[in-house]
Amino acid sequence: MSNKDKINVGILAFHGDIEEHEEAIASLGFSSIRLKYLEDLDNLTHLILPGGESTTISKFLDKTGIGKAIQKRAKEKTLQIYGTCAGAILLAKEVETQYPVSNLGLIDAKISRNAYGSQIHSFETELNFKPTKQNFEAIFIRAPKIISHSDKIDVLCEHQEEAMILEQDNVLISTFHPELIRPAIIHEYFLSK
Image 1 (spheres, rainbow, N blue to C red):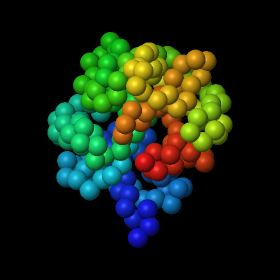
Image 2: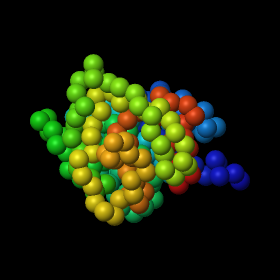
Image 3: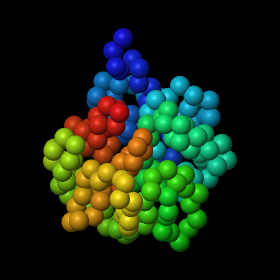
Image 4: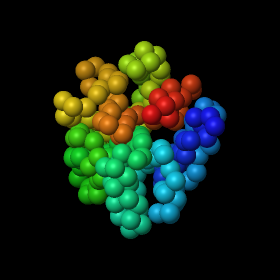
């Protein structure tokens, strides 16, 4: 049995960049399922919380009970979790925002929602992914900003002395949209966990 047979990837499929993450996963030779119901979480080894609108996604997580189930699996360390953009906001311990977000608090970081501005302030920049020492073009769309984080967290990527990717135990977050770039080096790293 190959390693790929042991990995079951889910993408939270209520709102956001679902198809783009599916394509990134497929580009690496993996398949994924769309997580819409609580029972869909049972057999997953890896879960992606995509970008989108964090307030809307947080309401869905609360209403369905999926949020509490993710927290439980994260604390048991039976699930690898990756949050991109809005997903990063939802995974943060603290969120700086004018709109309430029911975040999961699974990574010891403080994030400012839409810190770079609106859609028209979107930008691209070259970053370096420390674990693989690869440069890549990162795309920021209505991106959040990591304001602070615990010293126990690994910073895997930064730009102008600001953290862009953080990892704490089985939780990974990025403030940009890695699903839009190829090769999908961040997804590959995530799936290697």
